[in-house]
Image (cartoon, rainbow, N blue to C red):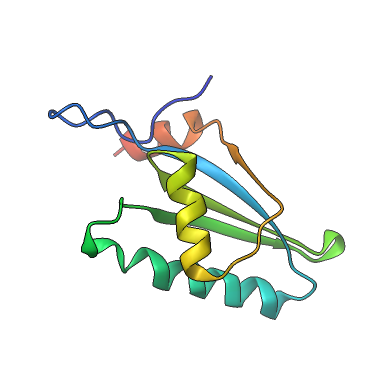
Amino acid sequence: MTVPLRPPDDDGDEARQAFLVEVYAATRQVASDGDAAIKRATSAHGDGRPATELLSSIFIPGDETAFYLVGARQEAHVRSLLERAGVRFDRIVLADAETLARRSLSP
């Protein structure tokens, strides 16, 4: 079950979802550079671009893979974010954010 991270706005905007981005990262430094680039690109959304947020990231050295969890309203917004950040990705999938939603609601 996919649960929105935040309910739709009063003006009818779509709820923000969590998307998992998979990236080839041969080293921890490559993963860290990707993380920093995504953070810089998310901070530049004030110019009319849709809001996106890097929620979490993890590097799996044995698989040479980094995963970035990104909050956005649509997958297209995540793709645009990654393009602005210069991050080449292998895939983007909608994540099951039920645990995240529950965690954000708890005191």
